[in-house]
Amino acid sequence: MIYKILKEIVASIFKVYFRKIYLIDAEKVPEKGPILIACNHPMAFAEACLLACFLDRPLHFLVRGDVFKPRWRWFFDATNQIPIYRFRDGFSNMRRNSDTFAKAHEALANGKAILIFSEGNTKMKKSLSPLQKGTARLAFGAINYPGGEALQIVPIGVNYADGTRFQSDVMIRVGDPVSISNYLDAYKKDQHAGLKEVTDDLYTALIPQVIHLDDLKEQDAFNKLTTAYEYLQPETPWPVVDPEDTRFSREKGIAKFFNQSTEAQKSEVLSLVEKIDTASIAAPGKIPSILAAAGLVLGILFAIVGFVGNVIPFYGAKWIAESKVRVIEFYTPVRIGLTMVLAIIWYLLCFIILLAVVGLKSWIILPILPLTGYFTVLWANAWKKWRRRLRAKSEKGKSIKLLQEIDQLMGLQSAQ
Image (tube, rainbow, N blue to C red; front, top):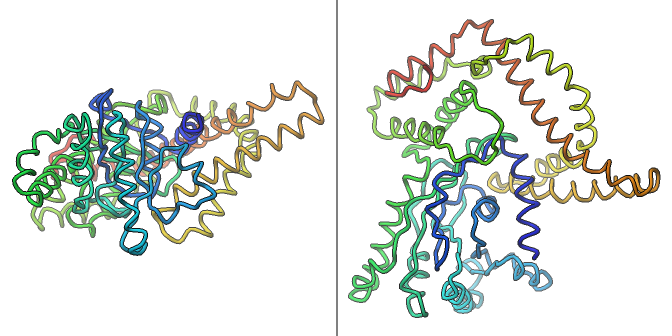
């Protein structure tokens, strides 16, 4: 029950925090039977929450054992979290992993889905680190349980356009499942070789689902370029959860260019990227700017109401996260979690005040707070687009011409 309630609440927060959640090829996740979901891990516990919210199947999670405190055990059990301990947690705790694997294998034997971060660490970067063998060990261990040979490993990539920016995009892409039964003969002959073969093949299956740069020194230029394309493409705010793969395919194409081109080719593109002014790029719109301006003026009162009604939880969470979080990978997950907690407290406080002033009719007023808050987000995005459109006209499309030139050099069609 707690899992289902939290899933709905957190999913709503995600739909506000992210402009778009691209959920690509979700139908590849088997509807039933034991599965291990092997995922990359760029941003702390955000990936676990995203997949739990937007995949149809309930998930079990392998979670760092050092966060398991006895007084919170009921919560971890209710949300399907299983502790796993690392070398840094001490030898005595490492011995407790036998219980961890027993619980995980029991869940798989019952046809459950377990999420595991196969890289073994979290790092906000646009690349896939070499995988640890823990996923393969967990998979082969499951074959000793009834139904274990039916286990499939599902590679899923979670890719953030900008992990720390409010109203940016996230792209979730599901790959083809890998059946553990294909590796049983090799594993029985040589366990070490079997583990390595599964781990290598899983990396091969996972990397097409991840925006991967071989040289992270090019990440800043990559981010600037993809942001420019984001501003150029006319995309509607709905649906927030979208199966469209255009953006993902475009960014994979750009990453492929950086990974496979010569230094001379990259140098030419990078020199053009430096000249781009992203703020002057605006998506072409069918509605004349004067009508867009009229819509912004008419909506400003509702936007102000939404801002005032939600400013405390939104900016309170932002301020706490910026002042307290020292590890960038934890910034956005902590901010989202704090926003949810502060919003619940704030809405309850407003309800109590309204109840005292208005009476029982206050429940009619209460839903206006989150709804107008979401309207404020949409209004703010429309305002930014309108400003970019004005600037794009004043700049006479200089940056768009640069993008078109870059397209030709990279063999893309994005800025046409």
